[in-house]
Image 1 (cartoon, rainbow, N blue to C red):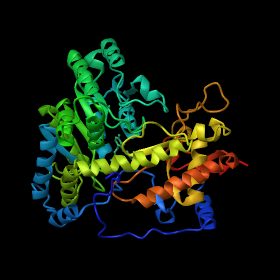
Image 2: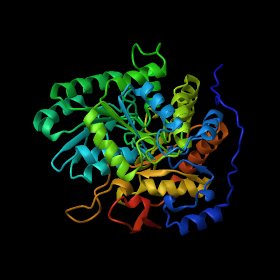
Image 3: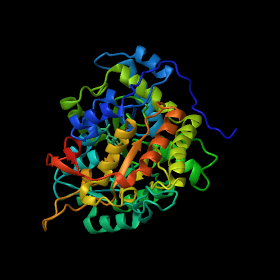
Image 4: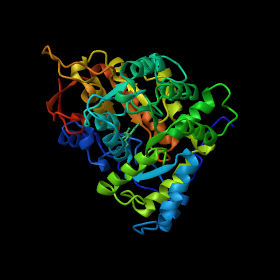
Length: 458
Ligand code: F0G
């Protein structure tokens, strides 16, 4: 059978609201042309993020009912801990309310001013949690990862030669850990190979530096390894995921992605002394180490989700659905990042709107146009997010790429929703010559994309 279907049927439905163009115009104007400021109910298809937006299964909902909210030593905690230990093989499991809480605790303990944390590419909260300690967050993406149109199997990899150079120059004392983000979200949701993980591990061993995974999308990464890495086709995603974790000394995790839950995360380590410090900090701000800021039901939902996410029929459907959208767009001449990543399709807005200069934010313009045209909410990942003031004056220094991310929530939308998105992007593409840029009318100095107000240029 050529058609890969959703490996689930629908038991509960959540209505979505159809709006008219005039209603969307009023809504986006009131939101200052910033899609983060829309009311979600005014969005038809919400592709802002794949984080915390998964649909839970019957088994997860059953787990929710079984949730034990005892303050200390709850049954749900032991279930959660067992699943995480079986998966990761790591000795200490510390529950957190989401990924960035794990990051804050880890970097808060290990990082000091003058230190550097290398990664294939840090996600923005990871970068921010490193920088707030005074340390440097250093991205070392591989060469293929820097070319959006290039077809290569593992564009999320780290440049391991560059890593060796950094470690040789700065030494163990100035590099408290090395991170690998799987999949590489900021780089387009591109996977990292086992070979690259092993090579980075070897370099970390040479210099005695701990090696960590930012494991948010570990299952999607394992699926790409199975599909693309020589010798891996015969293994299960679970076996591959376990090998990925076996190569590291610890991990941070947002269960809002491949935990298939709406909230939750964890921090793991093999270092006994570090685990003790982390638990002390956890108690201070998150909660007792057997719940870490989560309700028992969230621990249950995540425990079930971490196992379900590795089912082959689920991963095959997930990848097929995203590849379908990206391939159809590509064939129709819409510029997209290739090959498609594991959780999103990224439109190349600079190529989509070549007549809009970078300092007029083509990504923001495209994201607003998609909402106005079809009620689809996407996310600009370009110069609104990463543009920097120009020290010489004049227009800002643009970000490396101008992307618009269509992040696909897990198990939420059906094939006809995906077809609707496809048609909508094609229709906006057909009218692209009429689109104009935007200007920033008001912005905060940090993470301005969340709150900025824009004005359309005419
Ligand atoms: N690491 C990566 C690679 C992420 O993609 C995210 C979140 C985090 C860490 C932080 O996890 O949100 O649970 O605190 N990414 C979301 C996104 C927000 O839309 O890509 P969190």
